[in-house]
Length: 56
Image 1 (cartoon, rainbow, N blue to C red):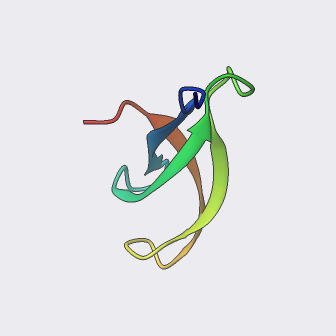
Image 2 (image 1 turned 135 degrees about the vertical axis):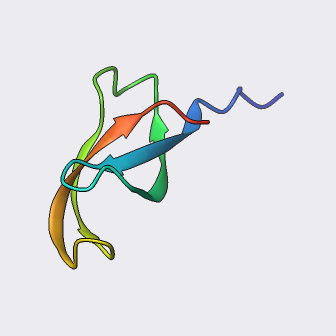
């Protein structure tokens, strides 16, 4: 029997303009702290820091 999948969907929000442009997966068993990524924001037109927020 297969194990339960521990990867969950996570929404990341731009810290500069507060827009949601990305959703990604995160393994909640191995990564307990919040996700922080540097990604391109199409609203700001530059690379910004994106932090994890609650999925709606």
